[in-house]
Length: 103
Image (tube, rainbow, N blue to C red; front, side, top):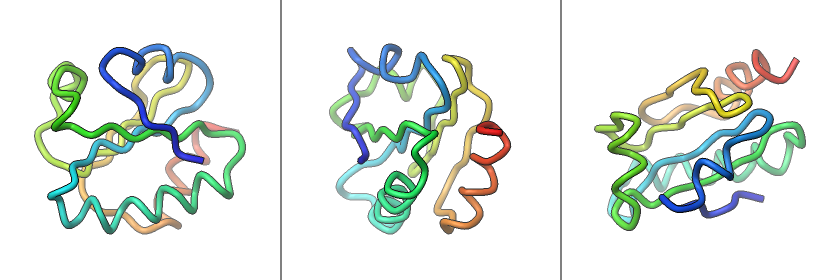
C-alpha cells in the first residue's frame, strides 16, 4: 500500500526504516506512468514503506529537498536521504536501487 503523506506528516512518515516517497502532481504525465510502478513495488516489498506526496497541495517539503522536477522519488533510510531518483524509472531498476538499502 502507498500512503499519502503531507508537509505536516512527512518527517514522521519517513523517520524509520527504508522509505520511498513519490513526489507527483495530477497534471504530470510521467507521474501517471510512475504511480502504478510504485504501487506494484509496494505490494511486493514489505521491507520498504511507500509514500506519495502531491506537490501542488504540499509545496514546503519538495522545496526543502530542492525538488524541481517530477516525478522525483526520494529514498530515505532511518530519516536520512540516501537517494534521489528523478524522472520515470521501470520497476526492476527501482527494485535494484531499493535493494541496496534493505539488505
